[in-house]
Amino acid sequence: MIQKTDLPITYDDVRAAWKHVGAHLEPTPLRRYPLLDELVGATVFVKHENLQPTHAFKARNAFSALGQLGPEARRRGVIAATRGNHGLGLCYAGQTLGIGVTICVPVGNNPEKNAAIRSFGATLVEEGQDYDETLEIAKQLAARDGLHTVHSTNDRTVIAGAATLTDEILAQLSCPGSDDEEIRKVRSGLAAPGPIGVSLPLDLLVIAVGGGSQAVGALTVLAERAPGLEVWGVQAANAPAQQKSWLAGENVTTESADTIADGLATRTSYEMTRSALRAGLERFLLVSEDELRNAIRVFLDTTRSLSEPAGAAGLAGVLQCRKELRGRRVAVILSGANIDRATLASALAE
Image (cartoon, rainbow, N blue to C red; front, side, top):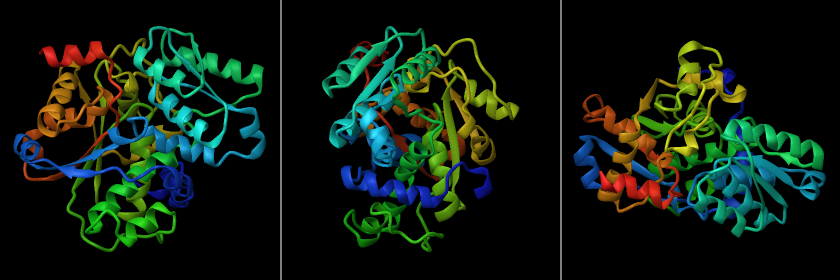
């Protein structure tokens, strides 16, 4: 079982994040679907982060990060490297809070995500061959222009924002209605620390891992509120740096990260999440490109919901392990729906 000392943030950080996340974002549904339960052979809860204003969970990270900036950083503005959803979250939060945002994306990035970033009034810089190269360019621009960098993973406020997702899941499972007083307490950052105190109808969460903010956020909340629940990670087999680092117990860098799941396409692990993932994940699965496409189709067929490849990775992991998950109670996060037309057409054609 993970120890709180293994984690880069505390539950107090999560409560601080809620004061900004809860003020600007509505709860997203947690639903079950008979067709999905039947297909998996388990009880499957789907957390619909695809219904965020930016169609991805990273809006939570952004409001947490930008909401906690000091006046000088707000005045100067922020910069970030992204494949899309981190940038979309920052653009939306920046527009809401009146903070200037510059977003750096790799050349050839998802054109629909680029268009959405521009629609929020952000400055878009297209440079670098992949996320890791673009991150270095963002660092150079931050130093040149005096901008505050919001890293998609190596930032305590970002991870705390992602943690609100799991905190909300636990509140929804432990309360009879979405407007229950306990949920309002959690979303206001007023929930008392410590275990929830009720039995939850859940055994494990299966979570996609790119940088790891979502998974480490979940581990932080569970260590405080529901320490008996398992967390499994899922990464694209074509971008396995985090999983290889988890196995090795140290950073492993890969030569490429060539996957349709752009939200998982990193070539390295990250300092702030690496050790927590190593200590906390019960299992760390790799899924193929075909499994990602299949999970997109399954979400569409069983829930009538659109998912991008990274958003379907958790379900891809569940489908891969159907036999051993039979009869268990599982939560997956439909973490994003920003899929481009070509990838969607490819998934639906199979």
